[in-house]
Length: 191
Image 1 (cartoon, rainbow, N blue to C red):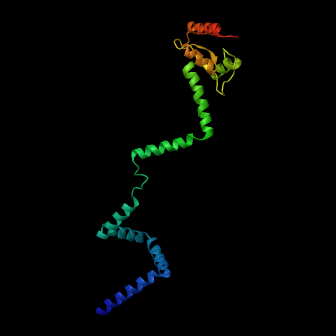
Image 2: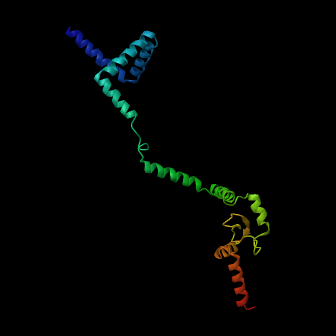
């Protein structure tokens, strides 16, 4: 009996050493595949896995592997403020492209005309065809002409260059004040 135990131990150690070699690993894989390809072999494999998972060592290993597998990455652990900041930066980067900026500016201007004054781009271009309604200039300092409107009735009166628009605004769109300013200029002006 002792002899058989010694023989079993020697055989076990030999198999362990053989399995460690590349040929032994390949032979073990092939043997397993041959056994597991049969229905009985697959059932034996499933039963072995079930026993392993129920054992203490199997439970510990399974839990450890699951913890490794489902560790939250640092990316998931961003705070709400960091997530908002990153999203805002990403949007800012995409909107900072020159092509996007020009398109957004043009779209915003068209929407502003429609929303604020109730006119389309074609109507604006028709009004600005002859330049400023007061001085006749087209664009001052590379800017578009301003849409002049009555602030009480919201009625569009025409388009003005920047200095003329500011002048009307300074006199609060009051014709009496403008006439007084014009007569003052006429009386004090030495030509």
